[in-house]
Image (tube, each protein chain N blue to C red):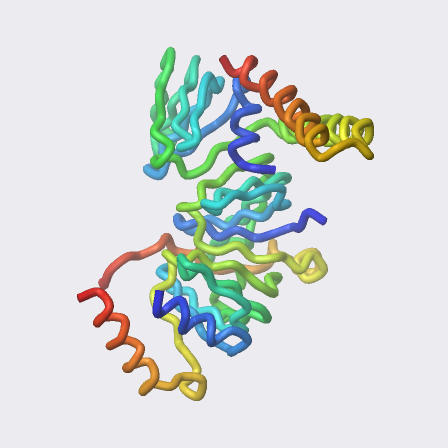
Length: 91
Length: 125
Length: 94
C-alpha cells in the first residue's frame, strides 16, 4: 500500500524512501530513507537516513520506484555527475 | 499520515532540522505551528560546511526556511498506533449507536473526536 | 487559469518537460493541477547515460515551480483557438 518513491530535491539530492504521508502543500513524509550520492570518481553510494519530513517547496520531483529494476541495478558501478541544484533565470 | 501530525507528535522528542542555507540544528522539539515554525531546546547548530558548531539553549526557526527535518523512526510507529486506536474507538462508539437516530450518531462522533484531540493538545502545552 | 485548461486538454499526450535542474523528461501527461504540477507516466530521461539517477522510475510527479519549459505536441494544439481564448481572457480583466 505504501510505495517506495524516489525524491529529487531542489538542491539536487536524490533520496529514496517509503511514502507514508503528504499534505496539500506537498510536504511529504518518507520512512526508511536512503540517500543516493552520485559521483564521477566512484560509483553511487547509498546512505541510510531514517525518517524524513521534506517541505513541499524543496521538492523537485517524486517518482514511483520500480523496485525490481532498482534492486537489479549495480548502483555501486554506475558513475554519473550529481544532479545540479535548480538554476533560475539565464546563465 | 499528515506531516503536521508527525511534527505535533514529535514534541518533546529529538530531531534534526536542515535549513535551505545548509545549516543544521539538532535538538528537542518544544513547540510547532501550522506554518512549521518551530522552537528547539538544547541545540547543536552545524554550519553549512559542517566544520563549525555551536551549542544553543533555545532556538526559534521560521518554517519557511526549513529544507527538511529528520525524526526518530519509532515516532512513526507511535503515531500510527495512536491513529489506529482513534479509529477503533470511533468504530466501537459508532457501533454502539447503530440504529439510533441521526442526531445521536452525530453526537457520538463529536465525542470521539473531542477525546483524543483534547489529549493531544494537553501534551503539547 | 487558461494555461491550466490548455494542459487539461493535453492529458494522455506525450510531452517533454525541461526542469530548472536541466533534466529533460519525456512522458505521457496524466494530470495537471492549478499550480501546474504535472504527473507523467512511462517517463524517459533525455541523455539517460549521463542521467542514470531515475533509471528505476516509471512515473512521476513534477512540482510546477521547477518546470522551465514544456514541449507540447504541435498536432494537439489549435493555435487559432488559443489566440482567441487569450484575447477573451485578457478582455475579461480590463
